[in-house]
Image (tube, rainbow, N blue to C red; front, side, top):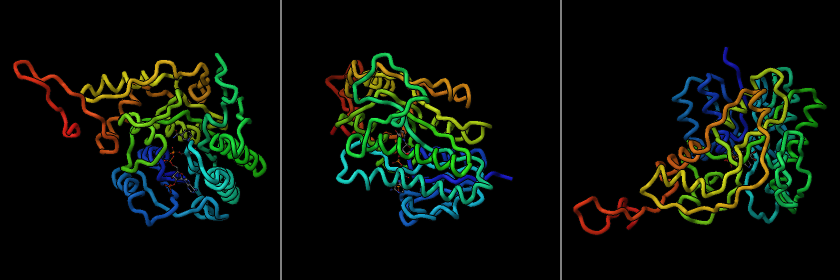
Length: 341
Ligand SMILES: NC(=O)c1ccc[n+]([C@@H]2O[C@H](COP(=O)([O-])OP(=O)(O)OC[C@H]3O[C@@H](n4cnc5c(N)ncnc54)[C@H](OP(=O)(O)O)[C@@H]3O)[C@@H](O)[C@H]2O)c1
């Protein structure tokens, strides 16, 4: 019989890929969403359900409503808690917009797990390298962050997203210990890779779209592939004794590398040059996810190209066309795509 899993925040960039991989493996997936009324947010999930072997049902649940997840967690074998706001910019009320949904939301979901711990074999929480790295004193030359590091330097008013991830993980681990259920945490660097949904509001997508369109962009130099993150979640559930903190991150690269990769793959488009010097001198030790979970990561080049390809194909990102020389024998320049105008 197929195992049953719950995925919170099923509409998200990472969760959508997770749902896809779970359905490919034949799981019965219960996905939670804030509202079932927004068809445009769930249409891609319904399409995955129709196309893949597993079975998906969607359920409304609210991170800030105690007991909201009781039914959707009841009887599940694994619970993947991915739902949490992810944005780095300013917020007029970071406690309400970021910290409460992350920390109280995690507690809400895990209290429902505690009520159903007879069936739930393990919880896998989407944490972040934000809960691990410390950057306030600037990049620490040569520092390699490991799963032993905790970021305890941010506050609700200074780095609220980072703070929300540390506090959510601390709350989750404390509750798991108190209630006696297993938990594993996945710590992605900035997540890139192919998009499935047509929506464009996830921070990862906004960032890559910004780069492709020559707009404003701000990049962390540590990246990873959404397919590897989803796979890491599933391995962390399935592999016996996998109850650690698993970092998934590639070595840092400057944005000039992204520019080079995209320019090679899409010679008809013009990309910003990027910067040579914005790669940090800190990095992450990913040996644990490789050894304990057996994860093999996609090369970054593939991650970038697949993300850009899907964004352009879906019309989410509109790159600027280059003026290309006419073929031999013709005169002047020609416009390779309509966008050039
Ligand atoms: N993307 C990255 O680079 C990255 C890196 C490290 C860690 N993470 C972590 O990965 C997780 C998913 O991120 P993502 O990139 O996939 O982001 P995303 O596409 O913005 O997805 C976030 C999900 O959380 C849900 N959510 C947000 N605020 C909520 C609230 N107040 N109540 C209920 N649900 C809420 C969203 O629901 P709606 O669809 O209703 O908005 C959405 O399903 C987060 O925990 C994030 O911290 C992301």
